Amino acid sequence: MNEDEIIKIVAYIGISKIRSNILKFIGDDLRYPSQIAKELDIRIQHVSTALKELKEKGLVECINEDVKVGRLYRTTPKGKKVIELIK
Image (cartoon, rainbow, N blue to C red; front, top):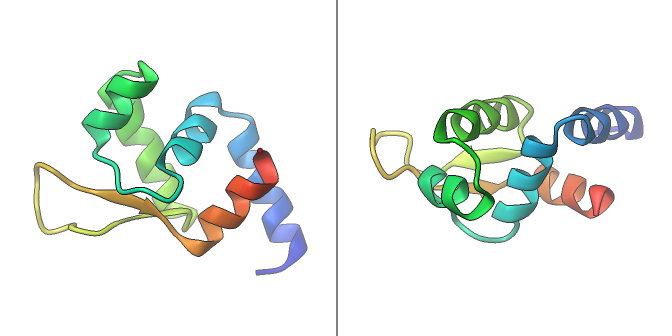
């Protein structure tokens, strides 16, 4: 991952308070979407959309894709690097 790609991703995260807050909240932990919604006071629909976008950018991953309820998300190494840059 080159520096230009990182800068673009940091800018992408920075323009959305929701994406930024979710990424930082997950941090080094495993989080459920419902937990994220409750703790950050964000509607679950917005959390789901943001998680999908973060996943598409390779910043978070779902560790149990096979389940419909109770999915757990964590940041990827790429996501952790972006968190360091946006703090």
